[in-house]
Structure formats: C-alpha cells, structure tokens
Length: 448
Image 1 (cartoon, rainbow, N blue to C red):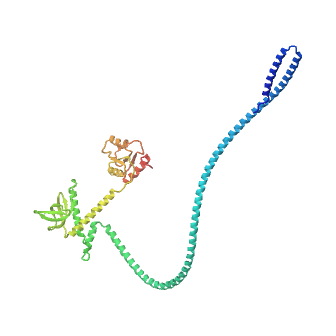
Image 2 (image 1 turned 120 degrees about the horizontal axis):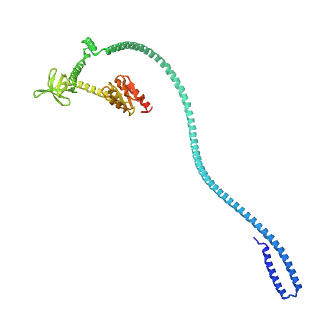
C-alpha cells in the first residue's frame, strides 16, 4: 500500500529546521540586522504553521491509512476464513465426487449386469418365440390330424355299435350259461361250508381232547379202510420210548446233571462186542438193546455214561434218516425260539440301583430289572440281619418292599422317604417295571 504524504512532511520539517539553523548562524553573524531577523522569524513561523497544518493533514492521512489497513486486515482474515471454509467444502465436494464416482462405477457395473440379463432375456424371448411359432405350427398340424381322427372315430363308432349289438346277444347267452354255473357253484359252496363247519367242530372237539382221550378215539376209529392213515403211529411210538427213557434217566441222574443223548447209526459185532457207530463215525459199546439184532442194522440209541442203549432197530436207512432229519429240525426250531427269547430287546430304563426286599421271587424280579439296564439286587430279610438289611437299603436309589414276604421288623428300618421306599403286595414283572419307572421319574433318576 502506498504510504501517505505524512512521511514526506517530516523530511520537510527537518529541512526547515536545518534552514533555520543556517539563518540563525547567519543572524548571529549579523546581529545588527534585526529587521532581517524578524523577517526570517516570520518566515519561520509561517513555515511552521504550514508545516503544522501539513503535519495535521498527514496525521489524519496516517490514521485513515491505519483504519484502512485494519479494515484490510479484517477483510483479509474474513477472506482467509472464507477460503478455509471453501477449501473444506471443496474437500467435502471432492469426497462426494469420489463417492459419486464409486456409485457411478457401481451403477455402471449393475447396468452392465442388467444389460447382460436384458440381452439374455431378449435371446430367451427370441428362442421362446421360435418355440411358440413351432408349437403353433405343430398345433395346426394336430388340428388337421384331429379332424382326420374325428372322421375315423365316427367310422369306428359305427363299427363298435355293430360289434356291441352282435356281442350283446352272445353275452346274453353266456350270462345265462354262467348263471346256471354260478347256481351250481353256490350249492356246492353251501355243501362245502356245511362240511367245513362240521370239520371245524370235530377239530375243536379233538383239540379239547387230552392225548390219552385222543389215542383212545384213534384206537376206536382204526379199521382196515383207514389203517394207512395211522402209519406215523410207529414214529410216535419211537418218540414215546425215547422220551420215556430220557425222562427216566433225568430223574435217575437229577443230582449229577448227566442226561442221555440221542444217537443215530449202525450196530455190528467187533471182537465179540456189539458196537454202535453213529453217523459221525464215533464208536460206542452197546450196553443193551431191544428187538432183533442184525449186522449193520440202522438203529436209534441213547448215549449214557459212554455206552449206548439201543432202543430200536429201523427197517431201512431211509426211515432212520427221516427220524434224524426230524430231530435236527426240531432242535433247530427249539434253538431258534430260545435265541428269539434271548435276543428280545428290553426297554432301557436307566442306570441306577434298585434293591428288592422279599423272601420269594426276588431273583426273578431283579433279573427282569437287570435286562432293562438297572443295577438291581434282592435280599431276604428273613436270612439277613437287620443291620445288613438297613445298610443295603441305604446304598440303593429305590427300595421295593414286598409286604407279603418281609418280617415286621423291616418297617422300623426304612427312612422317612415316601418316594425312595415303595411298598408292593405280591408284585409281578410288569407291575414292578411300571412302579420303578414312575418312581425313577419322581426322584429325577430318569427324564420325565
């Protein structure tokens, strides 16, 4: 900014002072020139007045300059704030621009995807249009074929009507014949039903007989005409003798657990002894036999204590093999039935301890509970001391007290716990299972 004239006035003042000093020096040299001095003083005063006025003007100009400079400074500060604000806005706009660019790029990608989808759809539409055209063409062809088929159907209907009329008369004749046949069959069915009813009554009557009564009836009914129906009576007799011997030996050896075993084979003499060789080539000495002995005769025997008792001789090998086959099948059926019973899956109730206090059926009931995964045991209060009974009850989660088979003192041993101690009168396997499941749920031993 240009400086005011005030600064130039100061220079003039200095010049004036210097001029006055020179005049003073000149005056001092000429003391007699008072008039000249007055003139100089007057000039000096006039110059001072003018200088003072100029100084005042310069002061005013300087103050105006300072005010203007202050105003300019404020204006500059405001401009700087505005510039800073504008810079900030410019930065924000730049960020907005970047976001807009990103959004534009995203929109461009979406637009590209949409354009690709549009092209795919357009292509699909063109393909569908071609398919529609083909369908319409095929439809026209089908319509033409349909017209031809209608004509053919009309023609066929006429032929069918003729055929139906013709067949109607044939069928009527057949129906009359079949009606006669049906009447005959109904009469036969009624007769067979009556016979079946009588047979069922007889069968029911036979089932009601015990073996002794049934055998008596068979003896009464046997005749020359029906004796061939009794051919299996020989096999029944053999089985009866075998069962009788087995039963006798079981009774005899009841304490030793030694029971006779059936064997099928052949008998012959060897070193003056009668020997029995079974079908597995095992040889045994024959201790006794029933019937007529023949070399290499097929026979049935019972093995007991290392020797064979021959119960009877067969007329043929075929007869022996038939008996043996039936015995094997019977054993398989019994074994299969036993396995089925063993493999029967019992419901798993839980793994907790149950004590049954009873003098009877305790083993059977605890065995059943064990099959359900329960740690079950039983104790007879008549055989154990009160202390032992109380200790056993304390270690169990559930105690079943069979009131029909426990002594009176047991009632004073159990704790005051209505859920843990359960009283039952003559329980069976099913009732004890139901009670155990309910009690275990109440005690929280299993989930409800």
